[in-house]
Amino acid sequence: MTTSAIGRRQGQPIYLDYQATTPCDPRVVDKMLPYFTEKFGNPHSRNHAYGWEAEEAVEVAREQIAAIIGADAKEIIFTSGATESNNLAIKGVAHFYKDKRDHIVTVVTEHKCVLDTCRHLEQEGFKVTYLPVKANGLIDMAELEAAVTDKTAIVSVMGVNNEIGVIQPLAAIGALCRKKGAFFHTDCAQAVGKIPLDVNAMNIDLMSISGHKIYGPKGVGALFVRRRPRVRIVPMINGGGQERGMRSGTLATPLCVGLGEACAIAKAEMAAETERLHGLRDRLLNGLKARLPEIYVNGDLDSRVAGNINISFAFVEGEGLMMGVKDLAVSSGSACTSASLEPSYVLRALGLDAEMAHTSLRFGLGRFTTEAEIDYAIDHTVKAVEHLRSLSPLWDMHLEGVDIKSIQWAEH
Amino acid sequence: MAYSDKVVDHYEHPRNVGSMDKDSTDVGTGLVGAPACGDVMKLQIKVSPEGIIEDAKFKTFGCGSAIASSSLVTEWVKGKTLDEAAAIKNTDIANELALPPVKIHCSVLAEDAIKAAIKDYKSKSGQTEDEKAAG
Image 1 (cartoon, each protein chain N blue to C red):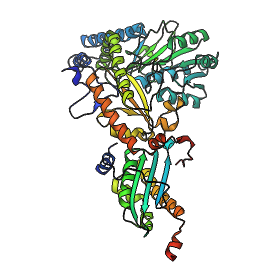
Image 2: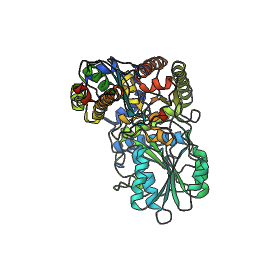
Image 3: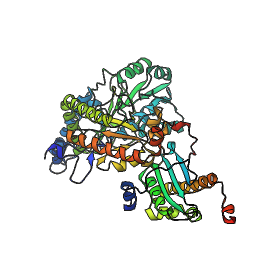
Image 4: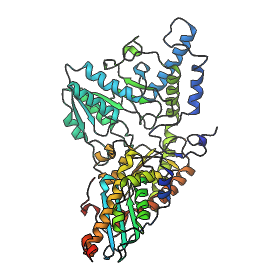
């Protein structure tokens, strides 16, 4: 199988939604397959060779995961995915240290699984500070410094935002947390394998990792939990005491193996892949800008992963645009794509007007994205935007010089 | 979300796209919705001295269902009297386009657009329905 065939089947749209999920790399699948069939042992069975070979595979995977973030293998706990990791990290620390510290700091643009976890802890009586972000999507370090107190148990700031791809200043945050005595947790579901990470250099105490965002399988993730200085957490799942008592349950050997291999491949290829994706992303952005006026990049363009670009196409509505770019599998910040009918809370947090948030598309580029696909995406998007602008009364008003904000709209 | 064939057809081949002179006395313009809500419809009707809608044009900022709803009503109002056009119900639009429940607001907006255009025409032509009937 050629790599260009992955992520796009005949008759299917071009896949440009790599922040949503990624296809499993065939090299990952190859490593996993024996652990479904002949090497099916329970990695916790200490009495026979079936268990030993499964355990060995899991421990190799643990080493591979640790290696990509500069951790020790003993600090890696397998979970079902980044959502579980985020829950375990934040609830686990909050519950363990609640007698001394009952405050949590996080950011308004975090993933829902972090925000919802924090909301849940608020109901239990914890205090939570939700930091705003600047217009470029990055936090203000002075605001973070002001928010962290001697009652703060944990600061949770994501490495890379899933919608706008911006990279938060992890090393600075880590240094601040260490100075203040708060633990630093970072949701790195979108960061691992995309940017260099070092838990020691960055003073990260807990880190959430996802399998399916890095060409590994769905249903597996990991949580890094620092041993020195030791971070204690209360487990959410009780049982046989696997994973150093922090996460009971028989490990899914094939999934662990897949996550490990995905990390190994990402580590080996990160530098070259980042450069390649930067080239493709610039090609996409420049190609669109050359042919379409009034388009705006959401989120900082410099402190950003290579595989993400989030663009507002003024005066066209995102869902209508998605319908127009039906040959592309992309994501929109528009209200209409969500059940809530609210535009993206991440884009709103940047200070974007609701109307601009409605007009956004997220292009997620990845390992199997080709230059030909990008060229097609440019042409297809330009045609769709031009079609919709030809239908848009707002575009007409813009051309006539009418300020849309000056009109008294009847909001419904 | 999967769109009905009719929605896709109107989206890809919208009928009666365009604008008419909004200052002309025989043209009524309805502009409804709000950019912040993700839907703006502009519907214009050109009315003959006999009170028949001779022509209709639309421009819409919105999702495929909103575009289809407004495209459809431009077809429906043509040839109708103002009263007949005003009787078009959002449920008729939603049924014709097989809109899912989450898109019903698009058909409501299209109905509002018709009523707004008729109201604008009447106010500009200085006639109420009663005067017209009496005249």
